[in-house]
Image: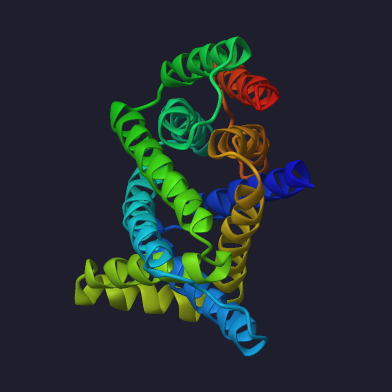
Length: 279
């Protein structure tokens, strides 16, 4: 069940990233998508509260949700710049694979997940995939840099979500708090002209952007359902098989990943599966 949830989350995550890559104004689009995802999550929270489901049993869950929100906020900002600087496939592979390399040792140190020989082998395969993706011909250094910043952000919110859930917080409540921060920062950082551009983009394509926001929210909420039951390192590494989905979607949106990117994405996915076997 955990594996099915994580793979579904991986597909949804790669899909909304690919759709944002197609947006002419990615900055405005991400601001709108995050606001929509937050609004939809609030509806889910309201339903759960009405049914008597508590969101936060104590302050620890709220505190970790705020930390996750800081990571999410930085993630959306870095992702926007990464997708504006380079093609979907290498940016996605570097950001997701880089997070694997960061989270796995941190989950061992902070959460007591086991260190095994097969885990070390999986990490080495992921690193090889990252190296292949990072030297893709024509990939701008700016795209590589922002993709790696995105990886740091992913690892931050991933571990914070795990800690919030471990404190008994509800998935929807945790994500709602995190997205509240992201939505506020995304809107405040835009000057009046950029906010007008975001409103204009939503007015021009309300169904499309609402759908992207729904896919974004679903990808994170399904991911957290899997995260509650699985180890942080295991869930993130398995979820990052999404690099194969992203590479396939890159072809679907008209991009043509090069041979190094195809090798890199495949290695990252294989390494993630090997790390999953180390669970």
